[in-house]
Image (cartoon, rainbow, N blue to C red; front, top):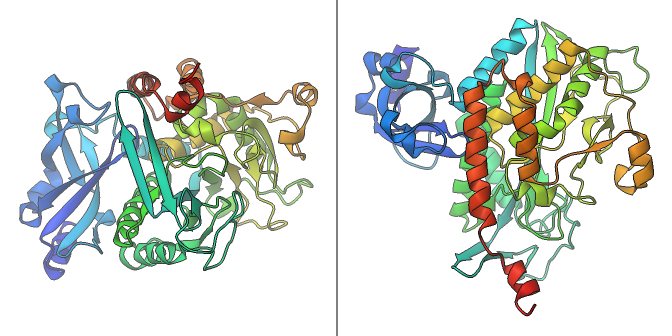
Length: 464
């Protein structure tokens, strides 16, 4: 692999290599190195180029030196910048002698090992939603902060005569869908340059340029790479078109937010263990039911990792296809866990969809946590209860209580409290110190954002 990578760099005349890594919060970071530094030794020993104290949650200033090593199989020529390539890295602690425990990709790799030790191979996919805007203006002051959005298909200013009503954008064609050309180019770049198979893209329900891209499923670590690659490509392509793309969960009041639904199946060689042809409800096995039981049991704690921002809880409201109830069903988008019911008994496509996650989540953490919660359900044989085949949003509160349906946390603060008391199911891959660092980072984020004064507060309270 070493020789072939160096030969590829020489053949493609690569001068610069972008090294991609991810912080605890899920933010993609990049350092660009000269390809002249790459040789057999540096590929083996890595590069001492990372200040861990400058990456939120990684290291203190007195212990900050970290080593990064390339993952050769992720190496791709960059489609936007000449003589440049991109590659994901693994992070090692000081002196490069052991893996850095807070590296999100390392945690995803450990999750794969845990699942494998139980005799399973995980297959994980994500539906990545986003908004494409013509312009976003953000301002902050010591009095107030806010933003304005300009988009052809909605928002505060319309540039053309075509427009979509709120919640009226689903599967809209051009010219109503003026973001089609951007999504098309994103898909073509992903396939042509990064080898990522894009299965579909379309306008989502939200009026203001909301879109979705579906791509191939893989392991938790590769899924994390895929999500970060899609975000990187999407932002560069949107910028080329003079647009702004955001993966913020809820950028528009009164319209649908963006999710990152996670789809999971577990395999034993060629057998999908979630499939059971004798099941007369959704063709799912008892193992699948236990997996669902684990998701519902740990759902509140999962929120801290899969819905990890204050803005996430602006999305998790009734009436916007975003789940707020810990229930399960087939084909029911008001439940947190859904069994897709497009095909009656397809062995290949039988899977579980967990709907609470959104694109602000660290993708390595989100995929890992969902798998570990489900695995805990299988190991402890946690029953999920009966499926709920009704629109839970329209249920009377008395019936919700009668059925024992619990709600997801309604705020990030609540979610962090749940994770603080329910984290042991994560410990096969996460360490307690990683969880503590994550909680500390997120609570600091809460302290900062809770101290800001919003435009809505000025509107409601200025004349109080």
